[in-house]
Image 1 (spheres, rainbow, N blue to C red):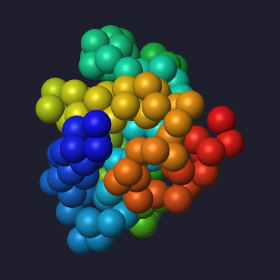
Image 2 (cartoon, one colour):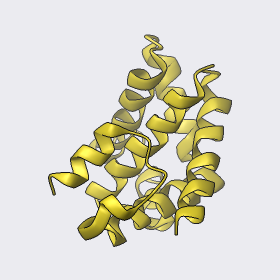
Image 3 (cartoon, rainbow, N blue to C red):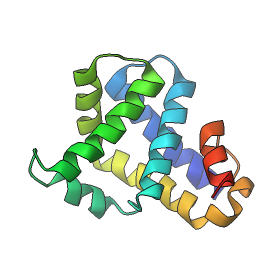
Length: 135
């Protein structure tokens, strides 16, 4: 389980780096964990759900809100204040099947281990750990 979590977080963080060029690898790792926690919270556990949202019309409120959540997390962890850069990075990630599969796999692991989250090793974000500790 921990190996699967590590590999998917690494893939997710890599694509975050590729889209944002943020030099802080730990921040990108935290971002990956936070996005996965958001996906788990929203019950976006399967790539088909993400594709369904992204196939909605560009002005669809659900689609806009979804992208905004990802773009905000990119802003928080990369400290890039350019809103358009963050938005386009989020859209790019959400159009990448490999990223979607990896982030959904992390969210599914979080979901499956919600009751005993403290047993999951490899979670580096204290904020994510705290969230699941309070659940």
